[in-house]
Amino acid sequence: MGTFTILLGGDLVRTPRLDRQIEGSRVIAADAGIGHARMLGLMPELWVGDFDSVPPNLPEDLAAVPQKIFPAEKDMTDGELAIAEALARGATKLVLAGAFGGKRADHAFLHLALSVRLADAGTTVLLTSGAQEGVPVLPGKKADFDYADGTLFSVLGFSDLAGLTVSGAKWPLDRVEVAFGSSLTISNEVKGRLEIALERGRALLLAHPYPLPES
Figure: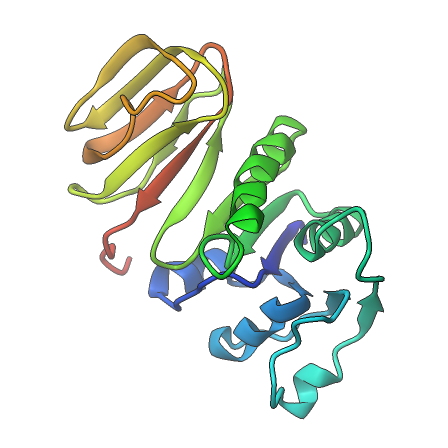
C-alpha cells in the first residue's frame, strides 16, 4: 500500500471528498495532528514529533499509538519528520491532511513548498484542509482535475512560470509567462474539465472544491 495520510496540525474539516481521498491509506500523525484522527475515524500506525503540542484529554487508544520522539531543538518540523517516516515505509502518494491554516503560517508555507519538492522527486502529493486542497504542478506534465463548474482555484507560482496553459476555466490561458509574485493566476473558476500544463517553472494548484455528486 503506497498511500499515506499525514495528519498535520492545521485546520481540518471532514467531507465526503476527503473520506474518499484517505480511504484505505496508512496513517502517520505529526504531533498535534493526532487530534484529527478521531474525527476522521483513523488509527495512526505511528505518532512522531517533539510532543510539545499534544491535544488534551486524548482518548486512551490514540494515546497508546506507537511514538517516535524527537528533541524540541531539531532540524526538521514534526510534519517533515512524519513525511520522512512515510517515505521510509514505501509511500508513493501522500495526503497531507491539515496542511493549511492553524497557528503557524510558516508551517503552512513549508507544506506548500515541500509538496512541490516531493512531487518533483516523484511522489504524488495532495494537500487538504477538507475545505481547500492543493496539488503541485510540474513542467512537462499535463494535470487534469475533477472539480465541478464554479469551483474557485488559483495557480500559485514558486518561480517564474513559462508556457502556462489553463483550459476548462472561466479565464483560460495559452502558454503565457507569469512573473514570480504576479497575481495573474489568482481567483479563477472551473468551467468544464480543468487542465493545466506548464513548460518551465514550479507551481501549485490551490482549489476550493464544490461538493461533487456521489458516484
